[in-house]
Length: 603
Picture 1 (spheres, rainbow, N blue to C red):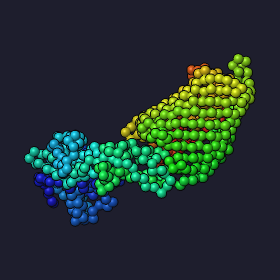
Picture 2: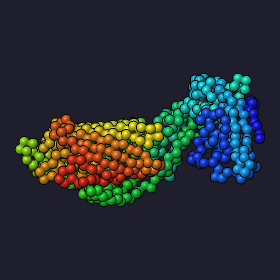
Picture 3: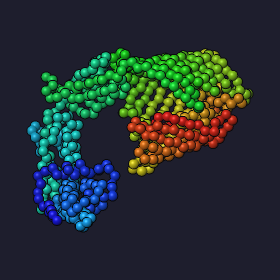
Picture 4: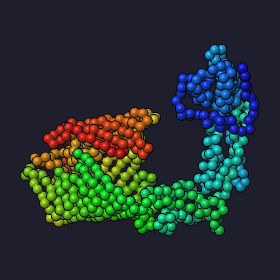
């Protein structure tokens, strides 16, 4: 039997790092540990010791092997105890049994040492006084707390991060000194830090084999020459370039001290790797609810050398066929602002109307933060409308065949306070659209179409395995009526993005020939319970409801409901979902159920 008593002073934390490598071992516990742990220990400390000692597939074959395992386990336990602040522990390696020997580590942890006030020793030159005070405050160690090694190491990292934020990106650590005082039972760290010189930013140097204009990139920099270095500013430039979607790779880095300019500033180097500039894509969709079709896309990236995207589209489908082009100009005249131009000829063939029209639009979108935005713009539609409508005066269906020109002001906003774009588990989102519209041609009318949708997510456990999700959508048209507003501007409900279980435009009153009757107001609500089943799979139960009204305020008297269940297969970028929904208010023409397959959650 070997007994170890630990009562020495230490000038470092070298042994503590061994334990840090063991903590949080990913393998699941087996039946046989390498050595049994004995002693009066807290549950948490015992768990850490067992994890550090590890597991074995086979018991020791003899006492010599058991002794070797016990001594190795004692070494591992020693590292854990010291890293947790136990510097007066007593450990014994024990072997019991003759024919079936058992390796044992007996642990008496002793008293836990506490942290004494930490200090920073600056290696010349020292940073500014205010920066020293900030770094001292950011240490984050509270005297009297347990003297854990992991906390000391993390505090050193916080000092470097604090200096970097304050304009000292060359800050580096020197060997720290940690004094373990056995008389006072304290652990006192002294951090030796070299801050380096204060760095001020210069312009941008662009390295790329593509056509990107370096002056355009330089104008995206969110700093002025001579401004103090801030990693958030450098990170923002990287985000601005990445969000264009044009580059396979973006690297933004500060140059070395040897490249300091005559003014004392340091440039930023931007390295851009272009994605293939021309891409031809083809696809097909099949849906019993929303129609099927084939589509071709030809995309030209960076045509004008400013991370632009020019896309030509041709689609032949049951409901929405079109041919057109879109041009996206990111960071147009201001960082974070995208100009989107679009022109197309469309043919929409729905149960409620047929529209053949030319469509033009121009929108400006301004990013707010990382995922939120607002936009404003104009649109012009001109074409032929063939509509099956309902005359509220005569209470009879009517057919309208008219040529219309529709000018629309467009304003929208999207606020995303959720924690994931495709699979949120906490937070909320809000979308608002407002469209003042003027109609000319065979009919003249002015109206305001507004719509809003809010979603919320709440996890019921710390691992977010069970999540409650809710959605509400409201819409209203002011200044128009059911007969005068063009059919494509009325509200409809039903389908995969609204009330599942009903076909496209299948919620709401219908004409005698079963044609969907668009409305002046809209109300939809959904609730889901999402549950993870293991690592990759999940299940969902949901209920949807919706109603179409013919007044400016939503009508709740004709609500239609559906229920359903679904499965999820979680990939690295988000879930693939498959839902089956059953309408509870089935009418003639409604299917008994609908199936939806898509990427991402329903909302």
